Length: 332
Picture 1 (cartoon, rainbow, N blue to C red):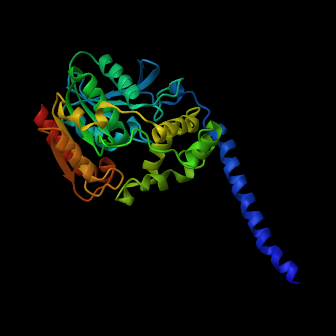
Picture 2 (tube, rainbow, N blue to C red):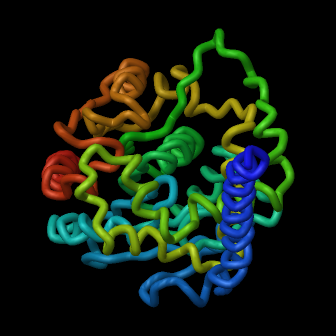
Picture 3 (tube, helix red, strand yellow):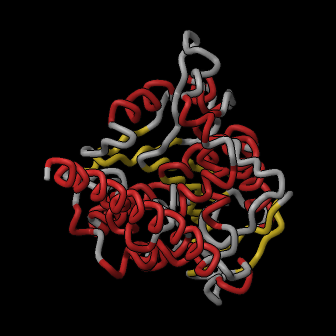
């Protein structure tokens, strides 16, 4: 009787492990099934494609044709369509609103060499800005998109008349910082591409987890509605999405890059006005980071947005639109 009693925990453990294995590898099979669309056949119809060095960028333009251009670069997991709650207000103020999907997010193609460094992304962004004409634009980068936006502004200042960073993931480094952090065993394991693709398929691109993951980035959880989660998940049907996001995440975690925009000296010589819009409850890129950037950039302006977190444009669209509108009115 005692022997039988001890069998039950082991049987329960075996059953649990079997469920986990089925779930993990089932998601891998599902990944191949759901990520089956070519990037240029899946994107919403109003977008167009811009050749930017080694990729085809998905770009949209809305608003008055003769209006000044406001270029929006979204953050991690986001794309041009996730600005849907804000574009109408920008257009109504007379701006020609341009959205650019930086790979691996959105509907842009992915680089064959899997290079998602800040410098490479900035060069792609610069190519897209050049395609818009010779008139300098207002460039806004949110979260992860803030790094390439700031880098582009430092590399090609003539293309940008005003830089706006919204809860940007800049990652300022001091001269005392080590060049490279030691890689953990987990990252070493994830160097194997099939494994990290499977890990992403079970988390970041798993449809059942989209809302839960998005909630981790906001202070106002009620902002993550089923409709908004579905909007964020739209590009996940593009072929190779899980693998591409895995490539990006691995490079992001292990990179030893030292970009201009990671240095306070880069912001000290910024050649255009800089405005920072920041959620006061942001725990992804905390307000201390905003203050550090503002201190590094003489003449910059920091606007704190009350009661919102890392994605203020969806947490309180009215607040965000009002504060951004004030900034844009000063530029006009």
